Length: 256
Image (cartoon, rainbow, N blue to C red; front, side, top):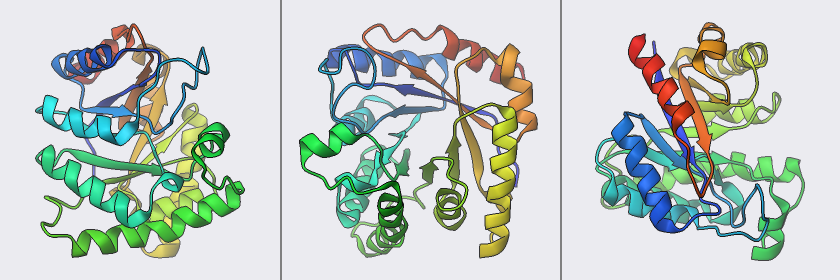
């Protein structure tokens, strides 16, 4: 299975009024991006730690109505913040609102302040990954029971690079693996993922390889493609949401 080159943008919901976020989503869609992501945190990750910030999934529901072409999702949802059955229902609902454009991005969680201030048990990286592992079949079981059913087999994106546990979860459950790092890191971890796929009897070509990019495509694009990436996501922060680098990546995709 071959995957087309796709470009995503993560519009970080921090330090901006909602109208600025909405305008950034519209600008990205008009520019030709394939996927618009936000993130699932309760406080800014950059700059003023107590700056403006908005919640992930209520925002995705709004994006489902105000966009028409792009896929949408969180990069990524924190598994700890919602019961898996509830998250499955939320995802199914946004899937319907968007006419089948939702990607369920999910990860084990890591940002301690979110947990502390919102009353979630932080645990350890190991316990959070164990929770994610047991949540994935519960999400799929709930999708099978919901009426109406999801409009499609909702794509699952799992973010993270832990080679022993996270990549095993990717092999078992994900359509997309989202990674961080350079081409050499991507190639090495992708080989680990391939080995997990062999262990669970899955064709590794089914899993799209995604990477966050911070440099122009002229600098890193060809090497990342050679390492197996086909989905490239640019992160933009508020309040200005500068789309210049994103538009370079969109132009690069078109030139290919």
